[in-house]
Length: 125
Image 1 (cartoon, helix red, strand yellow):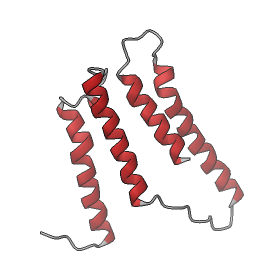
Image 2 (cartoon, one colour; image 1 turned 135 degrees about the vertical axis):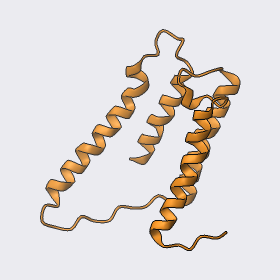
Image 3 (cartoon, helix red, strand yellow; image 1 turned 90 degrees about the vertical axis):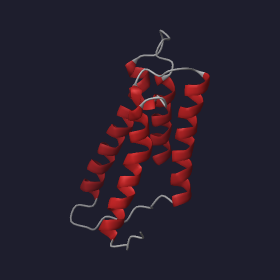
Image 4 (cartoon, one colour; image 1 turned 135 degrees about the horizontal axis):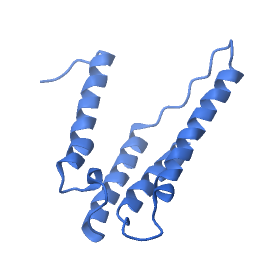
């Protein structure tokens, strides 16, 4: 299921660079993400009905290696598309804009710091 979500996000990233083509529209770009979100909501609704009164089983966690490879792949696609195709339609995928660097660097660092504080892991420094 995570692979489908990852492919939907990559689809949105890649098609953002081809905004000038007539066949690229919002349905084609953001449709797979919307379907993935509906799939998640439907799955959680069905699971709540199935496990009503019982404890739900634990889901498998994504390994840190797979998680880092997904992020590396997405960033590589963004950098390659900026270099070889040109400027995207939105500023969040434009590497010459500060919005991209906030989204790609600052937010993950702050998220990691906050998750460590919640887990009670001692900070170094």
